[in-house]
Length: 212
Image (cartoon, rainbow, N blue to C red; front, side, top):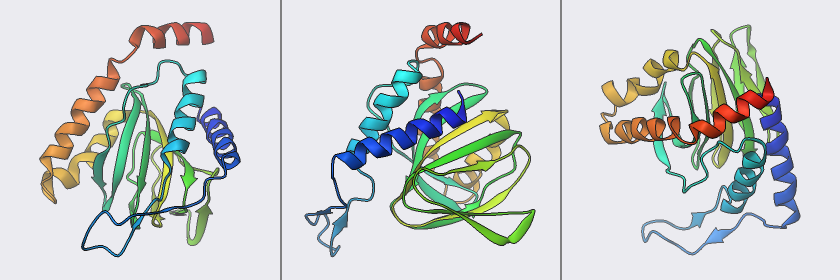
């Protein structure tokens, strides 16, 4: 997949969503101990985005999304896998609360296009500068580089990684194995990754042949 095509699809989807005229909404209280419940990422935007993604990449997963809690390098949030292989993945990631952490250093490049909220990144080349990414903008983590990041509440993004995905495993599973001991979420992530790995393999092979 082309990360810059993915960015264009995100921006197209955001424009389509804006035309619906849907503003941030306050839901009825779902929790008797809470003062209110908030919508931070609209399901209609997800539906629009997935429709547009499938038009360009028909081999992506099109069924019901499985949201799994993700804890890695100090940051926690929720992810939903759209596509996986041994050399790339595509997923939705975000958090209804604020979170921050270390990007990890991989033999793979990571491209995050913000769909809602705000992401802040600082790089080792000059840690005194903070780059702020708003909806429609894409932050890039090159291979073998690191960043520290912070996302405010209600920030969601489309994340694409390409390269040696296996090099990302230690960062991805370290907290589950040695910190929070959330083996159930780790198991769900592995199962869902394998499920998407074999999803529409023939369609993906056909797509790749047409691009050569």
